[in-house]
Picture 1 (cartoon, rainbow, N blue to C red):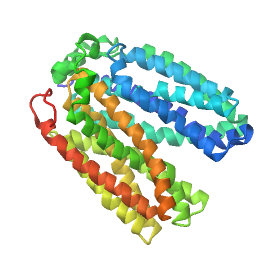
Picture 2: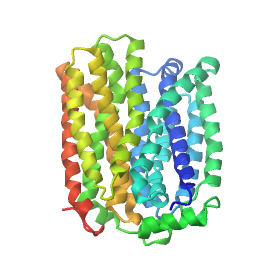
Picture 3: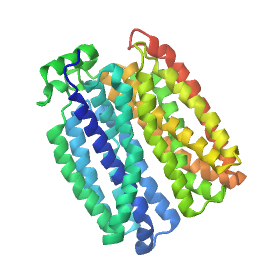
Picture 4: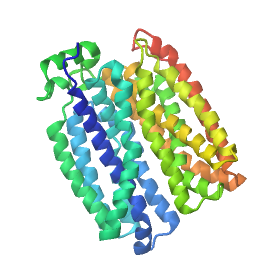
Length: 422
């Protein structure tokens, strides 16, 4: 009998800090027109500034798990929240292209380790049968943070100017870093708010996985991880998934305007509908992947990715804007739903000591996908003058990712977590 659910407090805190990180990340989209005018930046220069974040983010994604061998999640998260908040303030102080470029790369570097640390916290705090929903919950902060960040930034910029956006968000983030140090613990047993009964139930449910990286040997070496087929399978799936997600984030409003003839307001409205559907995906698909005693998450992942393909095909070929919007909404729901499973897969396939390292490597694949996705759409558009062709390409990516997911079935069913996928 479950004696308490105080562990959910830690889960909601992960949701909150992820929400803050997304609001800090997207606020530059609102400030961009003002920056370009004040600093005489060309559209191409502004594009470089916006991609600078991803450069830093991808690098620290990859190294995050190895950092967590040296630092606790509590120390790492408190430190990076503090420093990315300082970089947010510095963005408001920027005066040129070069200063913005350096600041935004540094900002990405400090935000990059957070998803891997969040994954490690979920691994240590939540029952194995809750991890899909738990990962889904904090991941819903990504689309919600995007919506709220844009809205709040617009209000601040209108009332106080674009630089005030970064001052408000940055100073608020510094307070969040202090609160993180007060509230976060790597282990349930170390948290003063946890009852002994709930701690013992978590430890009994997780078993050997309740051990943290701080009191264990380092697990697999870098060389061993690089030779592990399951690591590269996760990397490839996440690359393809994030290619599609970020292509949509960057180009879907333009698609509605150029291909469907929507005006700016209608395009924004249609895109917002798909984003709202995206917020429900991680929770719903995560919940489904948690159901039943014999959870095979890779099957749910493959099913969702296979269903993305017809959803996109229907969307781009529909004669009705309503059917088109429904197709893109379903595809967005499924793509964001896959994110929840993806962050759970390292916990299912690897020892606890390696979870954050594998998640970090996987995340770097997603960051690379984010860069490639946006560029690839532009290239296909330039060559074919067709959004439909671009979306057919990404439907192929989703199909390939679904096939890769099926390769994880053997690994997920193995009784020993130490056997590599071959």
